[in-house]
Length: 251
Image 1 (cartoon, rainbow, N blue to C red):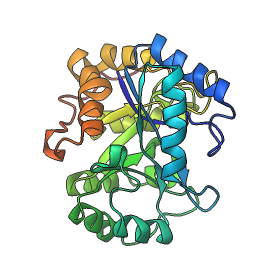
Image 2 (image 1 turned 135 degrees about the horizontal axis):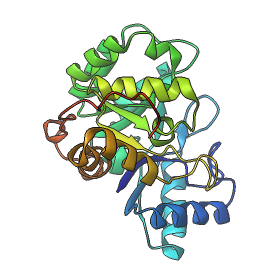
Image 3 (image 1 turned 120 degrees about the horizontal axis):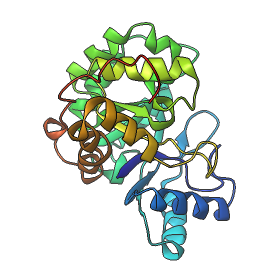
């Protein structure tokens, strides 16, 4: 499996707190079957995103822990300063400095004119990947808007722990609602530690496979995320082929 969203680098944000914890997170991911993981420290008003620090910590961690392979990325918060910076330097924040950009909305409000912002990103070759919309109640008030952004060319990433109930019933229901709508393109861990917000994708994958089939599970956990880290064209990122079976009880 390929995990495009994690906070495995220590001391950069609210994720891993130490080198030892980062190494433990990688072990958990490897044992669960993850071959590639993207380190995506926050870029927001609280945490300054420093690409050189990211590269240095990846090199240090990868030298001691060869698997899974670590890629560079960013958990990019949609504020004015960040947007201006990304438009000036399109490769600064993208995964592997290619063409996919993880974007996160604030829980406090959804800025107006996002179609225009996303349009500017797309014109500059940056494909927005909207992270964990199922955990943002403001976004989930209008899932049709998420569908329109997907039609515009954006991708949607749901959190593995949301699908299994780790973020509570609301996030779980929202996540499966998006799956029902067939607008989810990738599932990732958004891991922050090795135990509670861990990088283990196996349980979520098993649930997706049970409810919507092996093909969709492979697409969401392997094929699409691998195409993202490799910078493949957006039109190769295929949506789900069918909605999950109706869920009257937990898997």
